[in-house]
Amino acid sequence: MTKQSQHTTRQDTGASFPRGNSTEAHEFERTDTDVEDGTQLLVGREDDVDPAISIVMPTLNEEEGVGECIDRAKTAIAELGVPTEIILSDSSTDRTPEIGREMGTIVVEPDAPGYGYAYRYAFERARGEYIVIGDADTTYDFEAIPELLARLERTDADMVMGSRLDGEITPGAMPALHQYVGNPLLTKFLNVFYGAGVSDAHSGFRIIRTDSLEHLDLQTDGMEFASEMIMEAGAQDMTIEEVPITYHEREGEATLESFRDGWRHVRFMLVNAPGYLFSAPGLVLGVLGVVVMGLALSGLSVGGVTFGVHSMIAGSLLTIVGYQIGTLGIFAAVTSDPIQKPEDPITMWATDSLSLEHGATAGTIIFAVGSIYVGVLLSQWVSGGFGSVLFTMGALAAFTAIVIGLQTVFSAFYLSAINGE
Figure 1 (cartoon, helix red, strand yellow):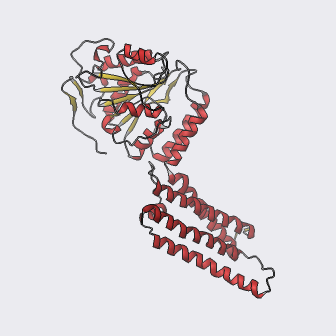
Figure 2 (cartoon, one colour):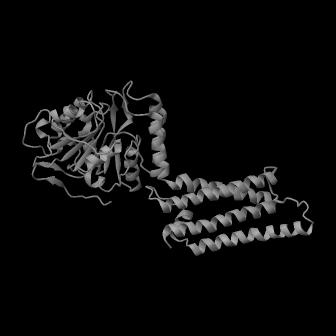
Figure 3 (cartoon, helix red, strand yellow):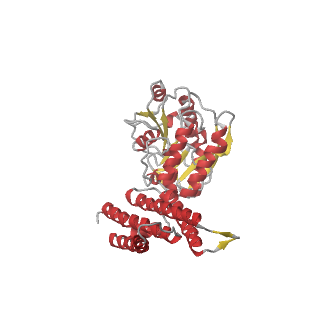
C-alpha cells in the first residue's frame, strides 16, 4: 500500500493532522472551543461535523466499567482538542447502552453475535480518519490515546498498538499463564507465520488509519478477530508500531475463556498459513523419508550405524506421509483464500504451473516404475508355484512408488476439477 505524504486536514473542524512529521499529539491544531473533559467535542450521529477520530468499544454487559472508560476517552479528546465520536457496539442486557447514551456516545446494536462482528459492524458506521479500538472493561487506559496517535503520526505507520508485555501489567490484571506463556507464545507464532514483528499481538488497544483499515479483509466474528487484524496487516507489509502501556485489572465479570479462545487463535493462525501447517512439515518429512530409504537401499553406514529393513519401512512411511501432507498444502492454497499464501517453490509451482496432463503423466510414470518391479516379483511368485517370496527393500521401494504415483494422478484430477479445467 502506498502511503500518502501530503497533509490530511479537516477544514470544517479546524483539526489538522500532518502525516509523518508531527512529534507530539499536542502539536495538532486545536479547535477554538475551550474544553475541559472533551464532552463538547463529542460528535453525534446526526451532527453535521465530521469526527477526526472514532473510538470504538465493543460492549457486552460492561455497566461496571464503561463509564470510566468513556470518561478517560473524553480526557484524551480534550487533550487532542479534535471532534471525536465514541461508538459502543453493544450487545448488552444490562445498563451499558443507557450509560453510554447518557454520556454522549453513539450506541449501535450489531445484528449478529461475536466480538469480531461487533467491531466490524461498528467500523462500517465509523466516520473518523483514525479509528481507536479498545475494550470497555477498564483494562485499557484510553487517556493514552494521544500517545498512540503521536507515534502513528511521527512514524507514518498504518497502525499503533499498546503493548502490555513491554509496558506494565498491574497485579491481578492478567493471569500468570496468559502473561508468561499464552500471550508470548501466540505472539511468537504470529510473528513467525506472518512477519508482524510485534511484542504483544493480542493487545486490544490500537489506533489505525481508516484508509489502512479499508485494505484489511476482516471476516472473523469471534475473539480471533484480534489476531486477524495483525495477520492481515503483516501479510500486506503494513507498518505496525507499538507503545508500552499499563494494563489494569478489569471491572465486571470476565468473558474470556482461556483455553477455548487461545485454541481459536492458534487454529485460525494455522489454517490461514498452509505453508507452515502443511507444506513445510510435508517437505521435511518427505525429504527425510527419501534420505532414509536411500541409505537403506545403498547399504551405507552413518556413524557406524547401518540402515536395514526396519529403516526402509520407516523411510517409506515418512515419504508417503510427507507427500500426503505436502499435497494438502497445495489443496489448501487452491481451495481457500488464506491470509498468508504458501511461498515455498514446490507449492507455488504446483498451484501456478502444474496442469492435469503434467500431474497425471508424472504420476503414471512413478506408478509404472513401481509396477514393473512388482510385476517381476509376481512372475517369480507364479513361476515358483505360489510359494514364499523373499521380502526385499527394493520391493518396499516399489510399493512406495505405486502409492505416490496413484496419489499424484488422482490429485492432479482433483486440482483440475477445482480449477474448472
